[in-house]
Image (cartoon, rainbow over the protein chains, first blue to last red):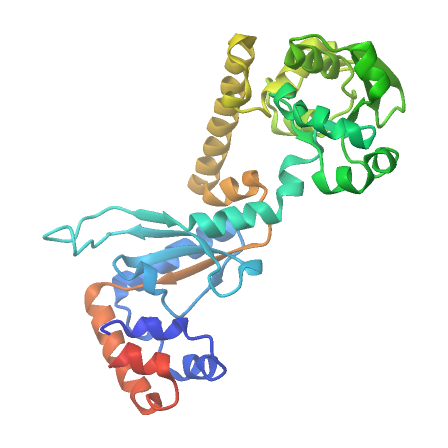
Length: 303
Length: 53
């Protein structure tokens, strides 16, 4: 093997001892590389991004030159890199005759997704609807409900349904804002019941053959008024996510709710006949947020 | 910008590790020094042996 940096992958008992003994690459840097590295430290401190200087060079970045960043996640074990960026003067010797100036980045998608899964609770927050089939015979009926809830974040635990959905539906720790019930009585009447978890109020809505429309419409009407999403939107100054103060009052208003819902949905979750207005709102909201985040980041870096 | 991206994705507890991998001349000198430093440890660790030899 021709790359001694691979030795740093050794996580054995004696590995870390060896790592402390070996010479560091910082001892061999020329003036240009030292200056390049030193330029980044005050910039990162200025923008408030915490960092550490990791002395042993990572083998995965060895075809770049000069300064390199690597984002790692502490809960991933040995393979903990999620994003890597080489700042300048990429030297892709395998594909180029001569070194090419530029920058490159790589992402470890598996590790990135694992990081996302770890904090999925924080990302997604409460589901819009918790589907609670009342009675064992209603499990089959409830199987079709996720399709009916297209466009909404729903939660229906199979294990809990098997172990006794009726008892679970009474649990106070059900996390969703709304709980949709459908028991034998509701099946006979062609309806379903909605319960607002925060306010404790109950509603009954008619289930028509176009289930996804009636469920969506009923849930949208009964959404709780205070939402973390709107608070986040106001903090970010997003005029799409945060309703105007004059029209907000104690409620989102129908337009605000549409935006609140739309921003959380993906395009494929929308039935084709729902229309494009909410999709436009979603795309506009996402675009505005992305542009604002990039503008803020660039301003902070340039400042 | 990447830190903002990770924050927006909801990924917490990330660490940013900054380093320099040097230019090709620096790296050649570093590699030679690493091989020399690890040569006495070849018998103790199979990973070192596979990396240096």
